[in-house]
Length: 243
Length: 255
Picture 1 (cartoon, one colour):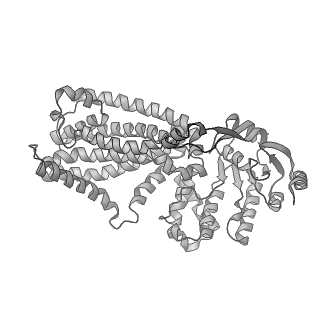
Picture 2 (cartoon, rainbow over the protein chains, first blue to last red):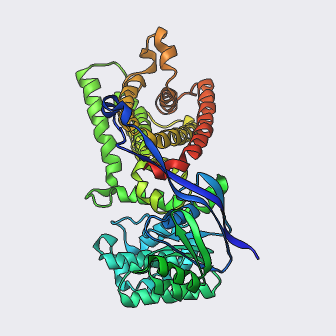
């Protein structure tokens, strides 16, 4: 069995400054204030994800879930350890990268999809299904500065979900659109799951996690607390962190 | 590097297009600004340096235009590329893509702008009667050197600016100084002999001299200085790329 994502002893810290002296004036006046601390967000985290698995990352705020997703998508780099990913990664962490407000929805599909590494032919092939999924209709040819925030998010999500990645990283996307569109998104994810895509899913919604993921990894203070079947992990998790 | 660029060629294309078309999208005159801007500049400089401060250069407007337009290409590209990583911080934080594309796309979109402005040079040469000679065949060679030099500079400047934001302000002043250290409004021959060594350290000087030789004096430019410049440009591209790759790991955390 081949692994889609291999996370090996990954450590990540951020430098936290107390009153960082940024300007020359501050540096001279408060030369002794420039203390910094390393804040460990992830501490020696290791796990493997097989191809076709859907894995949920759960944990309270600040446990390192989003940092881990950013590391896997190569937006930031680890301070120790290594991460290897087999295949193309799409992150649905923040949607609508590269959108330009003065261009039409159609043109922005090209901008956005090209950031995901698609070439013109590949985009041409997908453009109809992207537009159809977004349900924007004729609005697709008007500048996106005229869009409502719901329309904007629907377009961004439709591009991201249609780029045909092997590994999808999803961070709380369920805030997209109305109830009906959210259900449509969930169904699309199930469809992708059935196609054998690997998914890593960060969510605070237990229902969504149960619905979609076979396996869950519980992060706590930058360490893996539990890594098992979703139902088992969720049971323990709600025992400790539940209301 | 090449493979990465090839995979993301569509992104390079769309971001050049976006920068190029987005620039004038909402303005009334649109792409015409690519002509109006250099023409106004040309007008201002030729009024100042030929009507107010007299000089005895033939066809001063032509003398000026063949150097001023390549200089504007150099100047705007350097200033824009210095801040490109910082201004694109939003996208960098959102998504992965080969970061080295950003400086290339700034330089390339300015290249297209330059090529449009070159129409002014061509029209000016023909209308004024100076004409175009066979030396114009060397134009692409000089342009290629300038393009490589600019990408090298863009890598160095854009990546350092992330960590030292003051560079942006320093570059603005430096470019103003460089404008007067480059023979644009005056001729290379006017520089006193004893200072030429110092002036020759400026890479833009050799570019501007070459453009002026090709288009205005219609003679073969100084081959040896162009060769040295080409070596320096490719060297800078290599070093700049290495530096950029080293620093890019920390871009997102600094932005």
